[in-house]
Length: 127
Image (cartoon, rainbow, N blue to C red; front, side, top):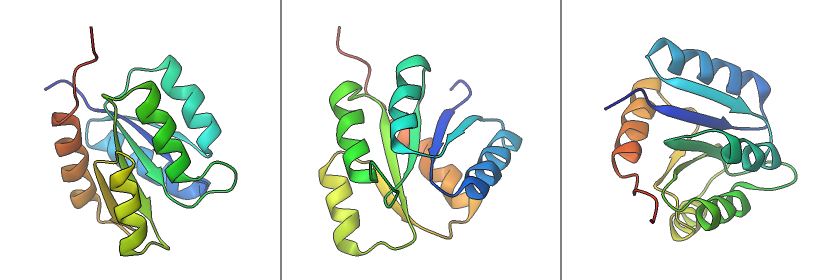
């Protein structure tokens, strides 16, 4: 498989920077934005395999963003990340089309495994 292309979306700038750096050190093309609106613009201009998306953000929240991503690019996999989450939030995310929902803090090895599995499940775009 070619290099994974990951977009990290979280309103915590320091977390985004740290995750981008750690994923790049592991050979992935990682990008970061700090809002749902920025993420929706970014996915229009950049080919990606997986979006790592925070559930709770000001403005567009994770569930709203995952619905929009799945409507525009159904083949793009989304992994939700939450620090305030509940089982109910995770279930809602999966119902909206997310591949998985992970709890913060996340171990980088576990994150890499989930991102790799999500990318493998990416559906080819419809003709």
